[in-house]
Image (cartoon, rainbow, N blue to C red; front, side, top):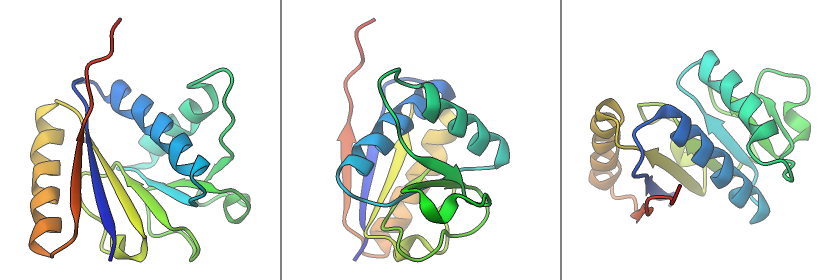
Length: 146
């Protein structure tokens, strides 16, 4: 059964949410998972694609947009359309809703920040997972010192 993890950020901005998504993607990749980042739309996918190249100067996370020729050859894909090819075993869901195909993955991560729209939609996602009997774990992250 798919394990669901919610990461609860103290921040309110989309930028903080995407920055954390990059760090989490790197961690998931290092643990040996093939990962798909499911975004709300093409604009978010492209913004995240750019961030994955620059979020840390000493980091390299091989990735590609799902509709590119390289998608089958990299461990991390990004997309907003449908599911990735079989063999991807983790998903980071940045879309407001749960995709119908979420149960194809061993692990699903959801990122919540303190923006009211995100709180509302992700609260509904939490309830949906729980009603369907999926194991859900919350990870409340501390505020970062500036």
